[in-house]
Length: 81
Length: 142
Image 1 (cartoon, rainbow over the protein chains, first blue to last red):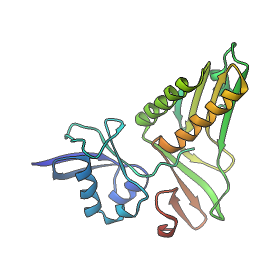
Image 2 (cartoon, each protein chain N blue to C red):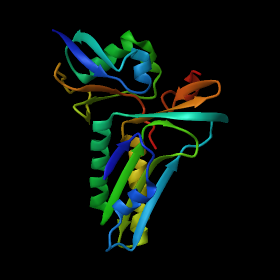
Image 3 (cartoon, chains in turn blue, brown):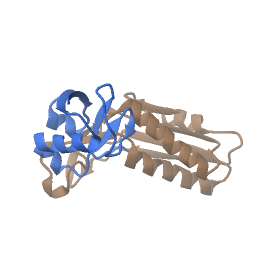
């Protein structure tokens, strides 16, 4: 089933996806599938040191199933401080 | 107090917030913007945060620290937006009964804020810009 996820982007992922919030359609699924789909459509994502996905303000495990209502954010390597 | 702010951090206020009359030690870490990175001149830094999550993550770090040490007071303030060299980017302050635990707790909180909190900085040089730590050095684009 095709899902329409709204992805919040930060840091370098915003430069790569080209927007603060990006609607991303894919066959619905897991966090791991979202990651692979992102790397497939935006090969530059593969050059990052890491990519985590946050779902509803928490770092998400790869097998978490995401829904269209979730707040999904791309978390490239953090560099605060 | 956990604060993510676009305004100049009032260091004294953060320390006062963390202070406690039962404490014999107040320990504060002040992180500032350096004027050099990778031998290049930093003109300014752009900080951004995933604010709601950043606050939640810092809250978890404080909770962990409070299990390890007897914190009598604490405060964390992180700046976002455009910062010039010399400006204060982050302040962590804790108060405890004695100095040893104040050093340890302050370092623990700061190290974890750096490692886990969804905050990013971009270095802007004379001749380019770069999101810090985003890519391995060899893949760095200028």
